[in-house]
Length: 631
Image (cartoon, rainbow, N blue to C red; front, side, top):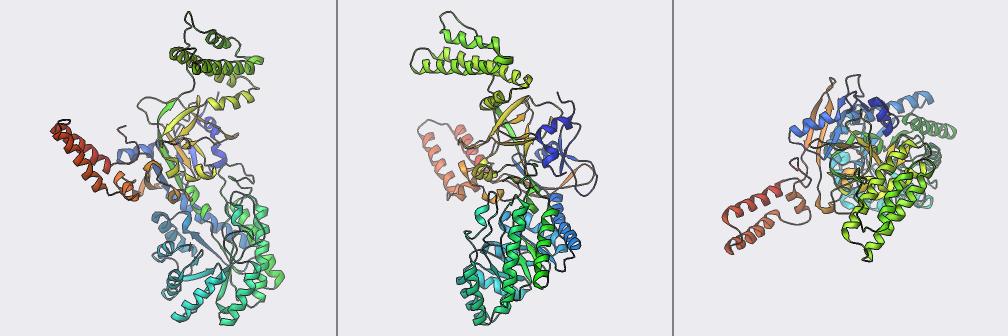
């Protein structure tokens, strides 16, 4: 048995994946550490209780402002250190791809804190360009325009140069050059251009399709040569200042980073020799987040640190440029995931549980089918060398009894007692498995009989990558971590969809199909936290079953063990969600009113009941799509 909160927390691998951002208090609460000082950690359950008292109830997306600031500082500090180590003569200019998290609170904070680093923005659509142009960035920050761009996009991007924005239009195709050339000529503006080049090097990981010469965006070697010829013809060669080569996203292996960067340097050197006055090398995304803490080249982990990533890039570029006799360019990266992923935690409460064992042993009645007695007799050898045999027999007898019921040979009451008997045996198996040193196979089989803990959230709305691409996030209880968790559970959401569940969890000894949890207590909240959800999860979510955005709260840590609310956005009301799918909430209310009025005239409903029904409908329209605190 584990005796302390820290020992129990080790079950969840906190020391491996937390990156020093969370810790466990002696009280058993999971707590947020302030990365900027040694102040007392802030209890997450206490944060949730304080928010609930303010009327801000779970589910909540909790943004921790210091964690966003910390990631930005770590990235720039790592590049500064790499520059000194390699004696690099160029500069670093990071940009944040708005697509990673478009929320205003995030973009505005990054822009504000990023001014000291000349941190810029990357956009891939007109709406994102409008967001970027509404920010007050450092005069030296870059505004990188990627993606497919129509004439309207090009027109606004070129005009923004007159406003002092360092806007670089990255050409994704030969056709885009013709568009920008026409508009720039009409506006009499010399555009600042970049070119996105497809590398032949393909990286590993979940997003490898975004790299290599089969990636969707960018120019092939042949198209690059055609573009340079066209730039010469039009007199715009001097406008080409940036080369963009996307290394990939969440690249797990540092060797892939170095190989891709090496090829990018070859293109840079050749473009320079063709007469392009390049000064920026944009190496795109790729800097990964270690979601599991395993420190290995896996889809949900990485085998390098941010310092190693930066040193590898800087060293590769420096050596290539020195060999070619070319000045060191300004290195640009679009490390969106690294900057924002760790800054957000999704917290939801457990509404109830379906338990797959039973402490009560059913009675055998005279006249019962012998299979029920056979099933209960298994209890006599649930131990030692016969443990596997006992589990096999229990499953066999249960399945035979179910077959009898389907054929009409036993009644519902007997089936119910047989199911109770099997659940009773499961409780014995789970206890025995914990005591057996060689129960590995048994443990694996028993994962098919873990509990369902029903959470107040929509997987599709708040954690779409978990559902769509099997993204792993650290997940664990926020309280009672000084108590040994005695149950194992799969987490289900409140949508009416069998896919609405989480059944892969990061634990200290690897990925598990069940999460260790505690027995639920009556009238006591039990919170689950999903960590590192700041990248991509917010705007990717859909409206499955019309569950809307949860409440969103941004907090800072006050340095005294408490917190301050910096920003709050109330979750979507039912009326808002209905409008998203083209219903007019007032029309719905009017139609319902007519239906109720007809019932009154027909004598089915009295006047007082009418008032209650209308009030309930109106309150629901104004209420949350999730379970309320009143149940």
